[in-house]
Image 1 (cartoon, rainbow, N blue to C red):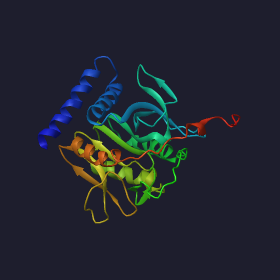
Image 2: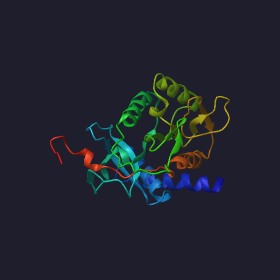
Image 3: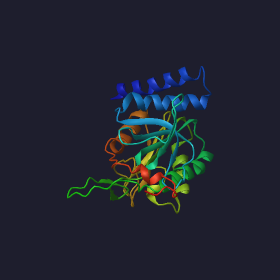
Image 4: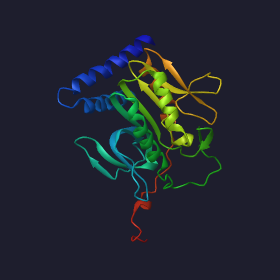
Length: 251
């Protein structure tokens, strides 16, 4: 797996350097992360950047990477030239903020971005009556469709213990399902979640979990595996796009 990890990290670094020839450093990192995910996730998961909207018209902040159910999600706006899209929240699986070098001062802004995204009303579904219901366990409870996940990926950044402390400060008073879920600094490792005894590791927090620092050279591989556990089992019910019509449209 170490060889696989080196290959994954090397491919993303090569993409970043290639994109830097015609993009800013920030844009190059965003494009490199999107390319990495496009190369390694199934085609059923769409990858874009832009904003997420709910049926009331509330919107997320601008997001570097948006993962969504490509088979069931209608796109409300699309600029095919650069994949900038407006996507209904019901179809969104996760968002990722990509940074060349993460600063501790970035965390409050990113935490607010996560809270806004995860607070959007995710109720415009056609709910089918069935004796068998598909549910996913996340954040300590069962969900028919859990809130969008929110991750950070940076090529470099602060000492992970300091990052963990800043994340803990940003989490004060915020429900666990509205927090930054996991952070990956390629040159250092990841900040994820474990139980209160410090054992195990998970992409998402739970009611009794604590942040866990994992310093490793295999940071991208570990991040990808932990993230995929939830991204690949995300269940998106049929979306009621009619719910997005303005109130003056009555049928």
